[in-house]
Length: 215
Length: 215
DNA sequence: ACCTGAACACCGTTCAAGT
DNA sequence: ACCTGAACACCGTTCAAGT
Figure 1 (cartoon, chains in turn yellow, blue, brown, purple):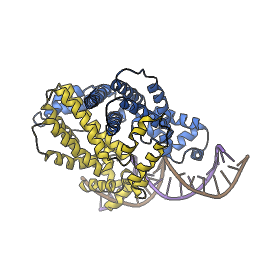
Figure 2 (cartoon, rainbow over the protein chains, first blue to last red):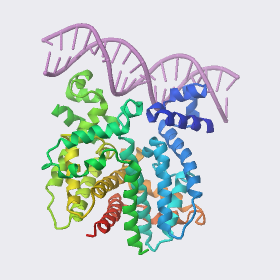
Figure 3 (cartoon, rainbow over the protein chains, first blue to last red):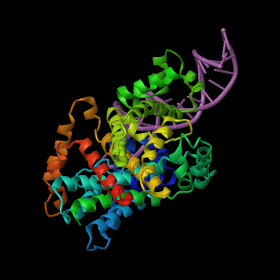
Figure 4 (tube, protein in one colour):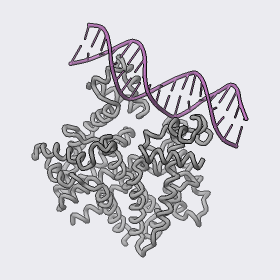
């Protein structure tokens, strides 16, 4: 079981979700395709278990974070740790927090995030919504990021800056009267950093939360 | 072309992304599988075009929204309109804003959202990040929502409340010492409304934005 | 308890050929 | 310009059979 998940994660890391097939996995394990069905009931379950497997290391990172006097700062640090893991493994973005079964690392991570809100003066509903919001920002930013590169970037034939630059060039051709906003931000878009974008989104949410909690 | 997209959207609406196959689509159009390749180069392009097609109606809705004196309230109304469209069409969540090519409805929608930030006292970078944050909240909430139902719900065999209730029951069995947060919010989770969750996340972001803009 | 080979029912995509 | 049939190279999943 352990080696099935380890090899599945290796395939995902090497070439993303499309690379994880039962046939490729069986070959890596030196066995037949059908063997894998003794460990998991479906490909969906394989993906969920592989995801939860790596969430285990994220959880360890999060648990190793220092505790400060400010729960919102701690929440920020946890979200950044989570986002960093997704930067390293873009395939994570689409699957993590999809299944938070009992006894999963995902549930423990969810609990850890939530515990910070227990230190804030909020209602139960506000706490529930606060954690959902933070997780949503992580997922939303990860999606924005993960689905950007259109193969060429993955192949290394075109780097990310060149890819963004192509868009930027097309946008600059647009009529400024019709697209004032696009013109306003095109220089920001060109060569922008996904991590900056994520941190800004996270900060807006956390600022809102801080105001709500009166902290 | 128009009818290809219309039928593609119909298939997506009826049974989600898995239902959209070239063979199913060809059958609906009364033709051969290969014909579709005259209109689109790949399934990815088909999905992108189908998405942009329905974003056209969202764009019309957004353009029909009244303009208030408060750009942040207008931004909120636009985001809610967008989210409502995703509630109606869960498959949209995974694909919209993936490709914002020139001449697409997605670009126009992006521009419309962004124009509200032009009415706020922000830097170009802050405007860029603000729109990314709002779109991120929509996508993040949509993902949280779209991937919840594990087939049983889609089949109608089990309704959503029953599905949430099962989780809630399992969570209540957890040790309260180890999972204080889960216990705190389990009643909120049980039977929760995705729209409430989204609106809370959106409000946190918009509160942060309002503070940033000094508005 | 764990693994296998071989088959089944699907996929997206291509291509030479038609009108 | 638009469409087709037939094939190709894949998929996930099942199942009877083995150890």
